[in-house]
Image 1 (cartoon, rainbow, N blue to C red):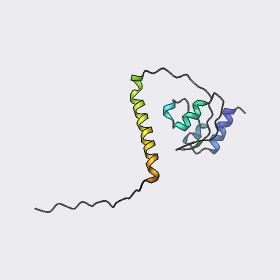
Image 2: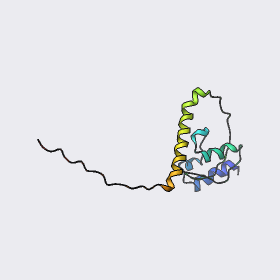
Image 3: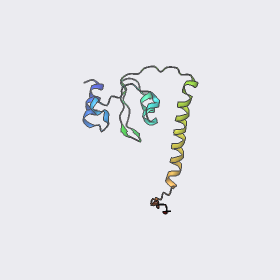
Image 4: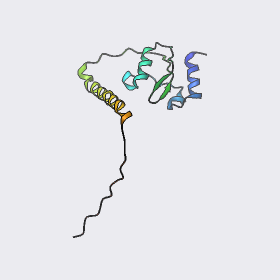
Length: 119
């Protein structure tokens, strides 16, 4: 059985991902649409290569690349808002990761609004 068919069969049987019903097929995607560990692994593979186990915030994955398309050149002015957003997300994640282990979170009971005095 071809590797892609076997992969699809196993994904349908074993995966908990919503794509299991279509054999785990994510179709074509750009790097920015995936979490970085997943994107790094996927874009390092050539067609019909399969990754080792990849851990992401969404779980563990096996990736089989079946095809690749060349990217298109994008001018910085066209992408700068997207670059800024991605940078801000990564900066936020780094700050949260740094301070989360030391954080002390307390939840105060909600204040109940008192009715205004009658006139």
